[in-house]
Length: 201
Image (tube, rainbow, N blue to C red; front, side):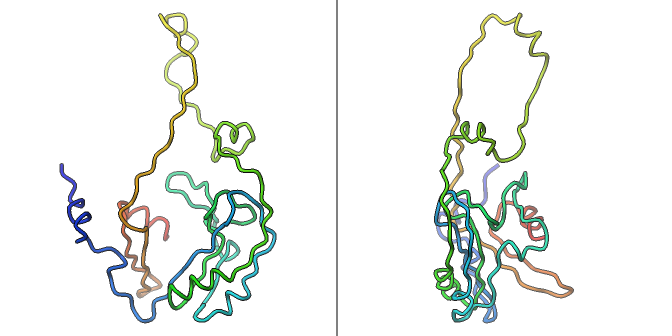
């Protein structure tokens, strides 16, 4: 079975969200994110950003009515950081304004006080420090103890496998349009419409 998308993507013929004209009343968002790889923040000053031209609102984790958790398979990551940041670029606040340019400029006016903490990049060191994300899982098939005596060879060692993430052909983006009965019509460039619907819901 051939994929139907690559030819139009590589020729620049595919229509992405940015190719669809925006309405005059559409609001735009920009993210204020962590400037450090690991740290705890004590204060977040939004005053100057809120006063910037065109800013409608600024949202933090305190404005999320449900659980502040995201994750396609296991919800194990905060949507907006609460007290601790774990990577450079982790979202802390969301600025909403009448244009993307105003939102981006307002983001630069947010002041944050962060205490930098040691950075752990080795997964084994993270595990030993109790910093692993999610619960430990063990996969078992058959009777391990009974099998050892039947083995001709037993090979022991350590295996490191680097995870890989493919590169998208466009910036991940979505557009939500309010419709009747408090509904939303969402336009999203995605390979998983169900996942988008689930996250929005």
